[in-house]
Length: 316
Image (cartoon, rainbow, N blue to C red; front, side, top):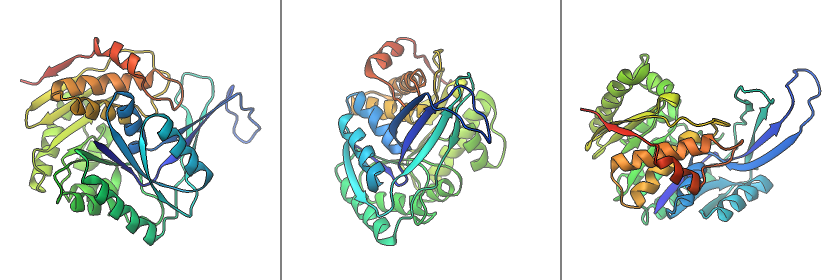
């Protein structure tokens, strides 16, 4: 089972307009709502690809009920920690151009200490039945900045693999506890290492350096994936290093593509595939999500079609 943990989930609200005029009235032509957050997106894609997955989420109010409904409809088992605060709404405005949408992300929370402690207990309890535990996303108000470090440390006592997909200080602190897999993009890898990471060769070097860092922090058999957008991704693992080429597709929205890569990867592992094949699934799932409108996720039939075009090359 794949367990995902999203402490700051959201409703992703995508508004379509014809142009975007600041300081003026803009008429909304289309409206889409979906469940959002790194872990929830990962679970939705993994479930779509036939993997068993549970999404542990802090949810409150009507927006929280909507997130729960979306998860249930899409085959994800929700494990809810109720919060007094209403689940946040992130708003994206697509102005009809070919440019990325304008996005407004709310902070989320506040989460009480009692709610946070309940989340800790729930995650550790659910992890006993998991193969992978995936920690991801931003932290809401009230949750300590060292939350991911606390969770990774607690989970290290269990026979599970731990994925951490976060950014900035929460990620840096989380790495101190030694998760087994991380997936920064080029910008995030640059911030972690304190130097620019640009292009494929830099990415391979950065992945190897970060993998050594995880091993030094006690992670057994650590792995690092660095996503590079249109250049695909590289991976450094104990089984070898690979470059996964991006699949050329007509991109409609990149929202959730990175989460989809991880969802495809872990779904492939759940089906018994090795690293090379799992990377093919990940790249195909990320591309399939990029082909969808707004906040929609990859569909199985599209992923299966794209798999025929997914190329993963082992690094000599």
